[in-house]
Length: 79
Image (cartoon, rainbow, N blue to C red; front, side):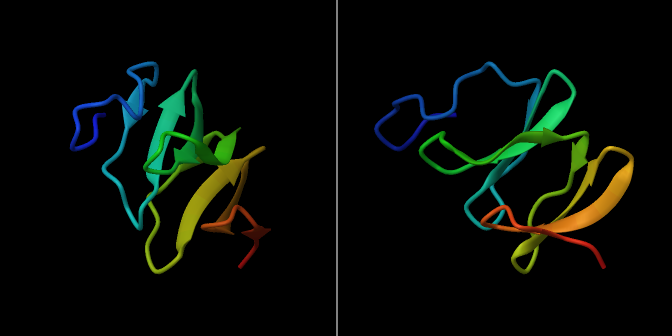
């Protein structure tokens, strides 16, 4: 993914990169998911076995066969 100056901000090293949702890109690499900001830096590390995009400040994630929510800052909580 490149910025307006055509500089690479997110390299093509990921298996999938979702469209940005609430300024975070959901990425998958080697069957793990995490979230990058628009500078290509990890906001939330590749720690999950599945992840949805963010909606209203939350994303649904799976880790160790458990489903829960995370905030944009990475805090986890169960519903």
